[in-house]
Length: 403
Ligand SMILES: Cc1cc2nc3c(=O)[nH]c(=O)nc-3n(C[C@H](O)[C@H](O)[C@H](O)COP(=O)(O)O)c2cc1C
Ligand SMILES: [Fe+2]
Ligand SMILES: [Fe+2]
Image 1 (cartoon, rainbow, N blue to C red):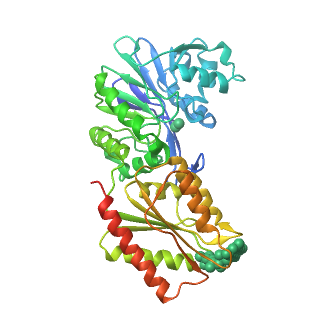
Image 2 (spheres, helix red, strand yellow):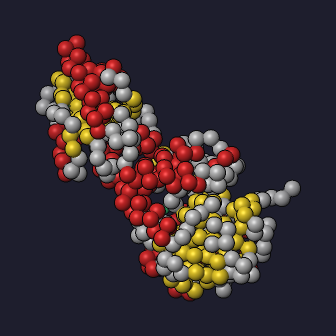
Image 3 (tube, rainbow, N blue to C red):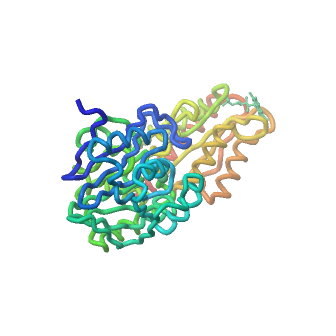
């Protein structure tokens, strides 16, 4: 039995990453399926390690590398991205291969120098590369592609020209823990790629479009995309690239998404009636209670919905705290071209709807129609009004869907 078996994904190119089965929270967003940090080893006359893993998993990555070569033989470490899930084991690898050269983008160099002072950054043999620069390994050539703001300023990718294999780092990733390594071996992978896109790349649609153009300009037509999270794309390469274009363009379908929280059920009743009204108009409807659902999935649901209704009860003169948190998250991710409707129940002075309106206004989000507030409990006529609003929102969703 081979312990910590690496997987050969192309001739002489190995996955030497780790699976984080118990990951449920990735810097704040829910990852119910776990995750992985993928690093890759390219064996040629020179040996290159593409990215590393989150520091607590360094030992596991090194065990996997050791199944192929003595880690001291690593010549090059390609650091595609400064973020700690990929860079925080570089210093461990350098302890074993002290003469290895590290390659990073210009902003990567700055970021690594700022993060890893205590890990001896000043002694690293750091080489800055830019888009189009090449590094020969012998039979193979690595080409570097700056992927600025996908999703950090330093983000970079590495292309193996001869194998048409793109190490895309965070782009094209998904957070899933699985013993499988390829897209044709797991279910729902596009869905998982969508959740990842909605939570990591949503603000950067413009950059995604430019990046895909840039690949064409560089004659980069990958046959395999090996991201730093999740499975490797080999069967659906063009499909995932087309899907990225659709997400970047903000493609929507006739759909109303209703998001809410509630203390005593009144805002929930309003939400249910809005759902009913929208459903009767024949569009797709989704309902998401903020404390009962993953916000990461809610963001995925929001991507293809042109209309979003958000409900909050008033608590202590303002909106409910989960609504405040969610709206902070949503306005930060800043999806484009949506229309919002705000509603909620209050007891005396109110404040939730006003608070939400302020946040929407400062984020320059467009409201579909006037907000609706109900004192304490919605009775039949209020419920009817909510159903009518739901119906109207569905009509707006039909008019605004762009696919
Ligand atoms: C802890 C707490 C604080 C509240 N603070 C306010 C308030 O400051 N102003 C107000 O108008 N209503 C306030 N309310 C009343 C609720 O907004 C009201 O009961 C509303 O109908 C709750 O909607 P829900 O059933 O969707 O939770 C408060 C209720 C609770 C439980
Ligand atoms: Fe990242
Ligand atoms: Fe990452």
